[in-house]
Each structure stands twice: as C-alpha cells, then as structure tokens.
Amino acid sequence: MPLHKGPEKADERPLSVNPFYGEADPVSGMTEAPPKHRLPDGPTPPSAAYQLVHDELMLDGNSRLNLATFVTTWMEPQAGVLMAECRDKNMIDKDEYPRTAELERRCVAMLADLWNAPDPSAAVGCSTTGSSEACMLAGMALKRRWSQRVGDRYPGARPNLVMGVNVQVCWEKFCNFWEVEARLIPMEGDRFHLDPQAAAELCDENTIGVVGILGSTFDGSYEPISELCAALDALQERTGLDIPVHVDGASGAMVAPFLDEDLVWDFRLARVASINTSGHKYGLVYPGVGWALWRDKEALPEELVFRVNYLGGDMPTFALNFSRPGAQVVAQYYTLLRLGRAGYRAVQQTTRDVARGLADRVEALGDFRLLTRGDELPVFAFTTAPGVDSYDVFDVSRRLRESGWLVPAYTFPPNREDLSVLRVVCRNGFSEDLADLFVEGLTRLLPELRRQSGPRTRDKSAATGFHH
Ligand SMILES: *Cc1c(COP(=O)(O)O)cnc(C)c1O
Image 1 (cartoon, rainbow, N blue to C red):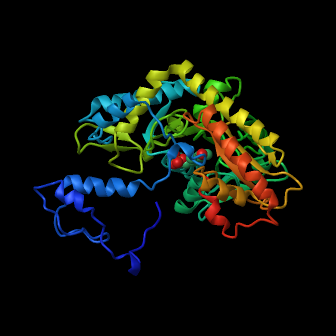
Image 2: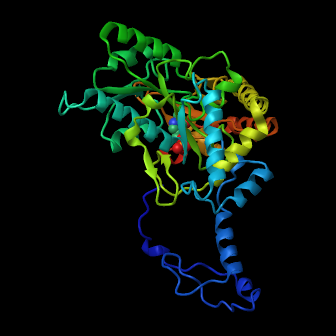
Image 3: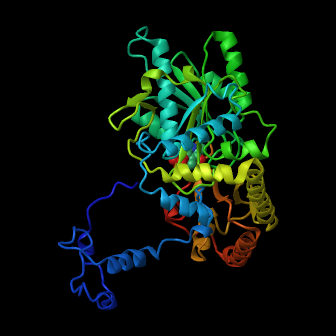
C-alpha cells in the first residue's frame, strides 16, 4: 500500500451528498454532509453511505481492459457466492473452522502433487496473502538454514541471496527487511533474465540460496531452472557448497504444469527446496491468496513454525499475518475442484493462444519489435522497431490509456537500461474479441504517432504504471 499522508489543505471539503439520498430515506433526514478526512460525528444512513462509496468507486478503471496486472479479475458467480458465505471465517481459527483448514490442507496436497514432490506426504506448505508473503516465508527458511549451517563459526558473516536483476520487488523487500545482501545478475544483450553460470559464480559460503523465476515479470520468459540446478550441482562438485534453489512460480507454477509438461522446473529437481505461487494470478482466484510449499521438513526449519493454542487446538502455522480471510482459500479449493487438470489446461491454453496471436499481430504492424512472444507466460514485451524515432513506448502507453487500455511502459534494469518496453499480460477473460479491439485501437493510433516530430511523454513515470 502507498504510505499515505494526511490531507492537503485544498481537500478539506466534505463529501457532496445528493439531496435525493436524504429524501429517499425518510428516517434519516440527513442534512449534513460527512467530512472526508475526519471521522464523522454521527452515523450516516446505510443507503446514503452505500451510494457515497459506490459513486466514488465508479471512477476506478475497468479491470477487463487492464493489460498490466497478472491478478484475477473475473471468477464465476458460484465462486462469488462461496466467498460471500465465508467472509466471516478467519483462516487462523483453525479449530473453530476445521473444514476451512481441511480445504487449505487439500490445496497444499494438490499443489505438492502438481509440482511433483517426490513424497507428497512429506511436503509441507501453507496459504498466504499472496506470493510476496510466500516469498518472505521461503526466504526466511533459507536464511535460517544458512544460519544453522554457519552457526557461530563466522561471527559477523553476512548472508546473501543470488538472483537475476529481473526479480519481482518482493525479493528486494525480503533482502531489505531481513538484512540479506541481494546479489543480482545483470541483464546482458538479449538475455533478460538470470544466467545459470553467472548465478553459480556469485555463490559463496554465505549464500542462503538462489531464486529462479517462472516466469519473469519483465517479459514473461521462464528462467532456466534445471540449467540453474545443474550449474549449482557442478559448483558443489568443485567446492562442496550445497546451495538450495527457491522457485518463484508466482505466475508460471500454475501455467507450466498444464501447458509445458516436459519442462522440468519443480520438485523433480532435487535442489529445489521450495516453490511459491499466487493463487490470485494464474491460480484463477480473486486477490488475496498465495501458496508456499517446501519439499520436506528439512527444507523448513521446525523452529520457524509456531503452534497456536489460545484459540483452541494446536495447529502448526507459518505466516507473517495472524488473522486472514478464509474466503480466498475456499475459492482456491473450489477452482481446483471445479476445473481439474483438463479445465486448467483448457483455460491456460486459450490464454496462451490469445497472447501468441496478439503478439504476432503487434509484430505485423511493422512498428514494433517483440522481445517475447507469449509462448511461456501468456505475456509479451515489445519495443519500437529500429528506425522508429518519431515516438517511443511511453507515448504508446499514454495514448492507449486515453481509450481505456492500461499497458505499462518501463525501462529495463542493468545492464539494459537503454531498453524501454511495453508489456501485455493476457489473463482468462481477455478474449480474442477484446484482443481484436486492442489491435484496432493500436492501429488507429499509429498514423498520428508516426507524424510526431519525436517522443513527447515527458513524465515517463506517469505512463509507466506498475509492472509487478
Ligand atoms: C506477482 C509476483 C510476485 C508478487 O506476488 P503477489 O501475489 O502480488 O504478492 C512475486 N514474484 C513474481 C515473479 C510475481 O510475478
């Protein structure tokens, strides 16, 4: 969340109340407008309060036109009903809501099986608020294993985590919050993610682990996880260093098992200690759920697990939060049950087909060069073709926004800061029909953009949007 400040002086006017609201509610006779930034002195009638909040939210964007986010924006009505039925359930009250806890356990078991845990009954895992919390937990487990290993032998030793510079911001947070040195492998040339050899070279006795991403938020590409593990195997043979791998599968861990069955990236690789995913991305659930799994008990130090008994029961938990809604976990179980493997495969395949088709058509416009083609994550990044100098990607992003499309433009990290791209994320619900409209909209913009005398968007950050 943004770290909010108090109100500006100019913003002290109260909420404006449509006189109708008061009149429509004879009981209230509401006369005074509630203030915006101070707790109102008295209650507001429910109908008026509802209208005020509802009306203000009308100006939020249309989530179906948002090609920036990975997060689910559509679920079927039955899922909504189940979520409404569970809105009072607190995930932490495992003893009061044993069936909700059981559904969480089944989700973990299904994911352990989906990710090929060699012994699914030995795998441990939990739900989280999203991948960020899951990554914090996985990072903490890696750090604790390192400190158990290093013990008091090297007082003052500083732990480090090796990863590509393209990692999602949650890993920068992890390193900052838990005081771990982030060792980042830069991009080079046309390599926009981690290089296995370079990763192995950055490891030393204080490396708590290496993070591999399936796939990268910058361009949707899968990082080469099995090659990474092989490079670390070779490192171990040479030096004795045994470095575990965490796979950040925020998106890809719910895509690859259905569409890329031959790709070996998961617990089949002995070096993969833990995996996370966002249930609310390609797990197809509304925001608020993620998953973290460890291959076995050795991968998750027992001392990090808390046993809560003051709500009754003695359930082991590993979480940053205490209270958390149970509805999203129930919705995840519903979706796994509802779709099954074949259903997930069909949904993800359709999304990938839309992404690939759209990437081809953007390329065919002639003005753009594709960096990725939507054939790993259903996501592609593109930039302006050589010779296009009357406009840049930030202009495209800004102009698309005028017709409601949110397509972020951003600059790549080191060593490709020279490269700026647009990125399209296809999700379930972004249909061929919407893709047609998108191409039409982009095509219509081009003549005007080509007539510009040069790039025009001064405030690049305004066009950028987020690119999580
Ligand atoms: C989205 C994402 C995250 C963060 O996930 P949230 O569920 O939004 O907290 C972490 N890593 C990767 C690779 C992501 O794509």
